[in-house]
Amino acid sequence: VVIGVPAIYLAHVRATVPKTIGVAAQNCWKVEKGAFTGEISAPMIKDVGVDWVILGHSERRTIFGESDQLVADKVANALQHGLKVIACIGETLEERESGKTEEVVFRQTKALIPAIGDNWKNVVLAYEPVWAIGTGKTASPQQVYFTLFSIYALLHYSLV
Image (cartoon, rainbow, N blue to C red; front, side):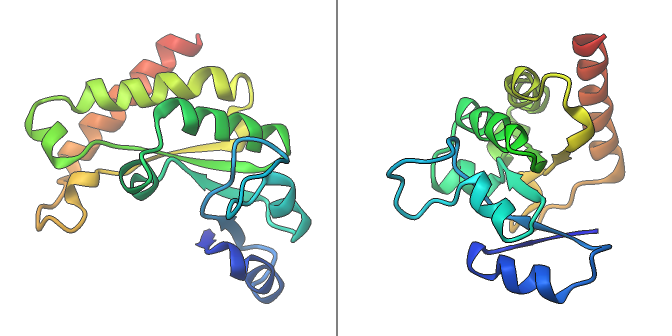
């Protein structure tokens, strides 16, 4: 179990919950230091005893316009600094209805592969069917299975 919390509460939650429960920052920047007002770095996250970070969440991609490359850069930096990563991928309602599910999740996943390298043991790839969030539509088990199987096949043939 891993709980994702806002940056301001990381130290409090880490000190409060049992060590058997992971705590994740909801974001971190792509470099260790510099003038990036409002951002949190991987070393800052580690400094408060937190070992996880969520990157590529749909809200970051949509609201803040985070590109696949930016997410990949963040993932590479987080892993380099010893964080475990929950890397989010998923398609919007428009992309799903246009039949672009595989295209989108493959593009997002392919951007992550070089960033992760041989560090997959520290990465959870989280499929987030963005189209099923707040739209009144529900992702059926079959839809999720098909997408996950496609991602698995992509990774199998890309990493072998």
